[in-house]
Length: 205
Image (cartoon, rainbow, N blue to C red; front, side, top):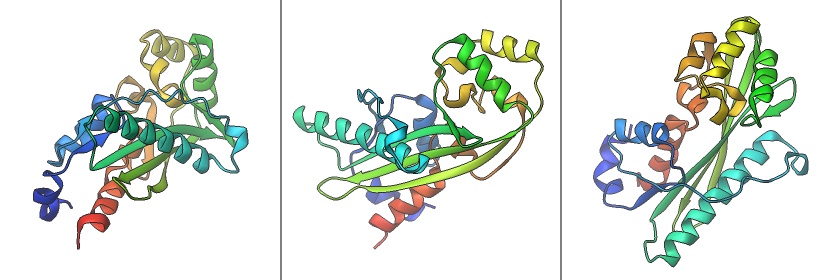
């Protein structure tokens, strides 16, 4: 999608407000040069203060972006564009972030077993000197039924401990997923197609 614009975009300093290599890899795969910069935002917002889950993940993504943008300015490394995202898993109108501990991960996976969950990723694209563009992408993920032994064995790998919803679809957790409806990259935390559409709108004229 971005091929006609890559010569323009790759002359700009585009920063991803994340240190996650899998998110950066998505952009590397399509030829877009981005610099990873992990945000130091505490991610301590209270979901109960927001009307919707979408508003919560968008605001968390925005705070990540603003922290990175301001830090780079102070270091005289200002970015032309900062992209940030925050992902949450929802089921039965309840939101699940990263597990607090092993038992929390086991409890979450038991909730997901044999059901579908909706992954929400709030995204912020912030051009320098302009208002941020915010949106939320959703993907429905259908899980196979899992036995207690399978759940505990998976948690013992430690993979779930750093993942929203206590699973990584791109890792061992993908073995439990029967199918998805929506954007696969969104489940990993960066809806690439939607971001590319925004970049096309910004730089396509």
